[in-house]
Length: 338
Length: 273
Image 1: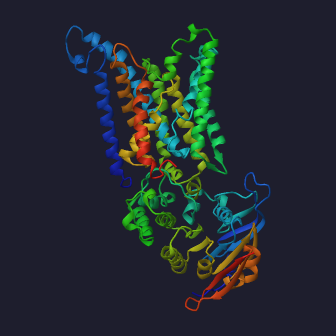
Image 2: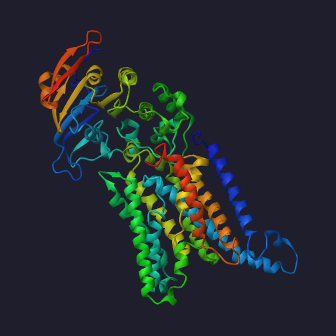
Image 3: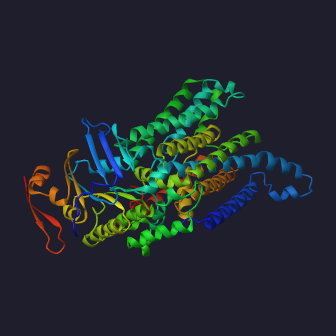
């Protein structure tokens, strides 16, 4: 891959925005009600119903999927660089699980009552995510080096523990208050008010913009912590800011859509195949690719067995798993994942 | 090659360590207890000593990569840890021994990383950065490999790419941790020759650790011999490479000879003690 130039950066971003718009248009024309975008322009009697269906039901859900995919894709790219682990992903490492436990605990404790004043559920999800990152760093580093495989193992263990705690609480607490927890735990894109979408979109925009500013530092961190330091990176600050932003984005998504797996793992690798490893482009490219992927996956989730819906987490795992195994085999020989 | 001997008089040191106390996290005893050394501008200093002597740690301390628990390392008279990191990176480059580089960055991208301290906060690399990176690659004989991912290179080529990254920083000091550890004869010689030329022509200050006593003796104007965190000897190669010191520090019986063609000393190890 040729080094990043302003021309390549601009061209890639234009390309990604076009693909993003195309996917959004395509997805909003697909659904169990059968309406397409063309119906909006039609002066027919049921244009009103088409409008309601597309603008109130389908579009908010598509936007939610786009926002969630973008956040998870960008967060995955950042976690892979900053944790120095190409297999890192907010889901596998238990960061999403920590956020889920946080959000779930806030709900069970009835803290939602404070929601109009404070975003308690989201804040609690963020605490769960950032605490998990802390545990991962602490337990998987030895003599100043972060060890990739122990980190994955620790993530898997944390994930299992979080899930068990959630299921334990679910069993103890009366079920009627918590219906939908199981579905949420697999990852489902809800239809939300535009107000909430706006809130999460704001977190996403701040997050992706902030992380893109650290793109060069993330490149240098990929060359090693000491090397980054010797090249002028203030490693602690870069790591602090990027981990907080990536955890915030993960937590925002998890608190509404649940822990959706594989997006953060598969999207950055797919984006790297197309756009190269430079994080100044990779972070925004992973956001756009993640949005495209999750919009498509959610459209599959709501149409393929319509009117029954599959949780989107099932779709992402079913495509993400095999893709990742293929990538792993392809790369494993060259020491890419060591 | 002649060995002019340690440069001490006249110039103020470009690198200085004063009273360093350093203990690795979790280690029972400190590695350095009260270490003081000074390197003059334009010196070519070889840091030698057995495994665990503190060679790598010394370079990390001098480069401001790690902080001592007591004492101070300074660069051009300023405490190195107080110099803003990007400014420091324009003056000192460090070549590390162990470098696991993630993802498929190409040789040119790696060399361009050396330009990071010169770029504006959000700027991409400018034509002059590409020129500097390619000049460094040319010196390292890697120009025809610029588009290859680093992972696909041989270990010798990788090492040269990392040295190219350091040269692209256009530093006045390079700290090298065993720069020739994985290199074959030709490239080992080539790297020392390039360093010697930059040292001679551009006044680049070089501090290079090595297990290769013969290369260190041939190219360094001064050798610093470390033994478990203590500076056991410091001076011209002839003063440091003596059978007695080698026996004491390396626990090895050795003979020291002078090569008739290069005039450099060389060590013939005879038997471990």
